[in-house]
Every structure is written in C-alpha cells, then in structure tokens.
Length: 143
View 1 (tube, rainbow, N blue to C red):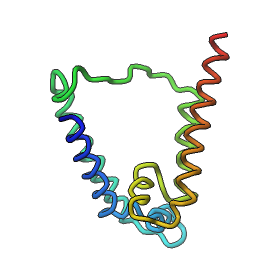
View 2: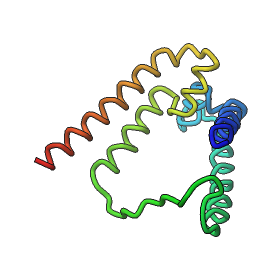
View 3: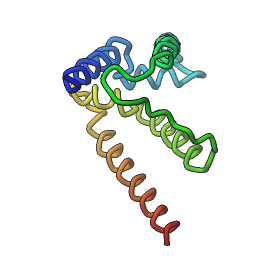
View 4: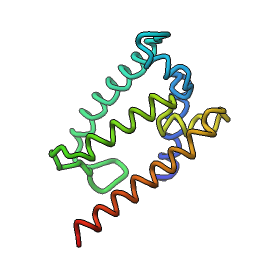
C-alpha cells in the first residue's frame, strides 16, 4: 500500500513540475535572470508551494502519528555549521548554472530533455562526492 501511495504522490509531483514549468530549464533560468529576460511566473509556483506546505504542516503537526507510518521524524538539531551553509550554496549555484534541481531533473529525464544529458551525470557525481566527503570526515573525526 505504501508503495502505491508513494508512486501516486511522485506522479502528482512530476505532473505539477511539468505544468508549472519547473522542468523547463529555460523558464527557470529566465526566472533567475532578474536584470535580463526575467519571468516572474515561477514566483507564483513557489508561493503556491509555500501555502500548501504551511497548511499541510499545520494539519500534520496536529496529528498524533502519521497515517501510514509509526512516528514522525522531526529534526532536533538547531546549530548552523559549514555543511549547512555550503550545501544550499552549492545547490543554488548548480540550479543557477543548469536550470535544474533534482526533482525537475528526474522529470526532465522522463521527458527526454536534451540539457538533462549533461546535468544528470554531473548531479549524480556531485551527490556521490558529497557522500564520500561526508563519510571521510566522519571517519576522521572518529579516529
């Protein structure tokens, strides 16, 4: 049952990315080009996402337990470290250069977008490198 629910939610997310234009790197890059060919339409997409997330979190945090799981897993750490700052900065640079972030990249892969052929290997290598750096740092701290 959980697989079917997750599949349905993933498909809904993918369709939303296509309909909103987030799977089109040209539209994303035009949104980021504030002093050039700026396209403000993605601000409405993000605003809609914030509203839905706000309402969803209010509903979920009012529940005792998840509908399909055992317990909620909410982060407890509140400190800000270098990884917390570097990760989003690197994510933003990649998004700004390529016009993709991971969710829309997977959607664009299914659509056969040409730019994705260069972006997807770079994204996977970056994810692998981040994991190796993180695991290497943890091993060094343990030693």
